[in-house]
Every structure is written in structure tokens, then in C-alpha cells.
Amino acid sequence: MAHAQLAQSKVVSGFLDSLQEPRTPYISPKRLSQALGVKVANLAQLTGVHRNTLRNPSSERLQGRMREMVKVISAATELTGDIDKAIYWYRNEPIADYGHRTAAELVAGGQVEAVLAFIRDLENGARG
Image (cartoon, rainbow, N blue to C red; front, side, top):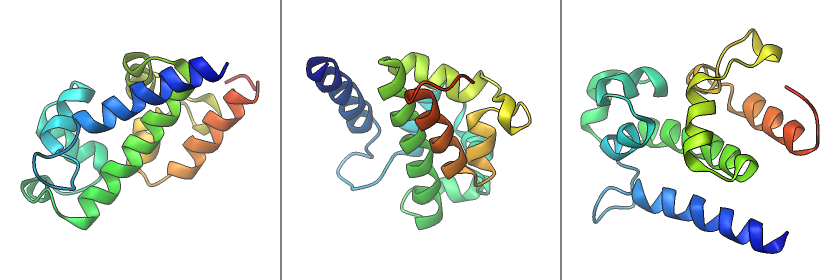
């Protein structure tokens, strides 16, 4: 079990490293949009910020929203063991308990804690 957790931790860590804006402490909007398979313009919608905000990667509001997305995707990766599955789930899987909205829709609407609670429930054996 510890070996599997270590492997998943490396997957999450590698994912996080791949998102860093070169030579800065910031998440790159461009790199995150590539990881999610969306156009940069669509990232504004997913993060709930105005598209012009994406031109300023150091924007605290933008960084905060991207950190929330990454936090949920990382938690989902720990559950699935696969970053691609986690991203697919995040973008596409409707969650019945939350009006059949996806994790991406919920996070964009500011309901990060609800999504993280849902993931914790799944980890503890509840069914979604």
C-alpha cells in the first residue's frame, strides 16, 4: 500500500511540476490549459475569472482559482492513481449529489470544499 501511495505522490508531484510558469513560483495558465485539454480562453471560464486576467499569470485571484483546480485534480489523482483519468473525471463526470454538475463546474462556482468532501467520501467507500 505504501508503495502505491508513493507512486501516486510522484504522479501528482510531476503533474504539479509540469504546471509551473518557467522561472516563477506561479502556475502557468497556458500549461494548465494544455494539461486540461482546453484552449487558454476556456480556462477563464473554468477558473471563473475574466479572460483578460489570464494575461497576468501572477494575479492572486487567478493563481488562487488555479490552485483550487489543481488541488481537486490532485485529490482525484490520488483516488484513481492516474492523472489522465482524474482530469477526465474532473471535466466530464456529473456528480449526482450536486445537481449532476461536474467537478469543474462546481470548482468554477466556488464549491471546492464540496468536491473535496465528495472525493473523501469516495475514498472512504461511498458510492457516487
